Length: 198
Image 1 (spheres, rainbow, N blue to C red):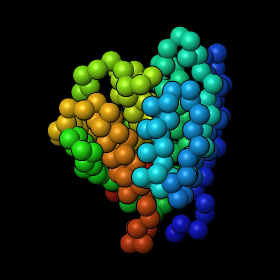
Image 2 (tube, one colour):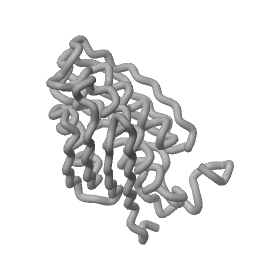
Image 3 (cartoon, rainbow, N blue to C red):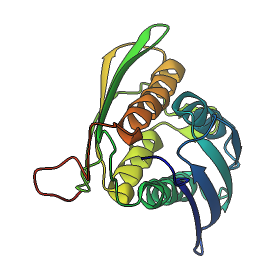
Image 4 (cartoon, one colour):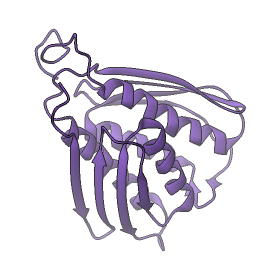
């Protein structure tokens, strides 16, 4: 297992956004992100670094309106890239989880690469914005990734009050859980499902 490079290139253009994204699942944590939203770039850099994914992303969005279309559409494209890079899902662990501390914040993320999208969010922000990122868009981003990739994704805030730390712990715990779930297990033949497919 693991002989083929798991790389996906996805491009998506609408009247609201123009996105080009390359994702390498078996990378080294390299990231080049240009979304026009500095704090979102920071979160995606943390995602790539801590998941050991290589991510190259450019997005030209209608930020003169607000951040919604840019963040949601990047979630859709990233989800598509994850799904495409995974391919048949032969030999992967499928499940992954991480409880990640970030100073006062403690966030749990659990994923199942089941092919059945479902998203549960239990992270509460107490400010409207972190930098140029509308905090309500954090949930929309993970929802878009979940449904586009076909991932069962749970995020749960165990503790914390600092909004920056809560966001960062969410992105990093997702990265660690996804890295675990996409890893190969030599004991798994085919796909890890009693149904025979994921």
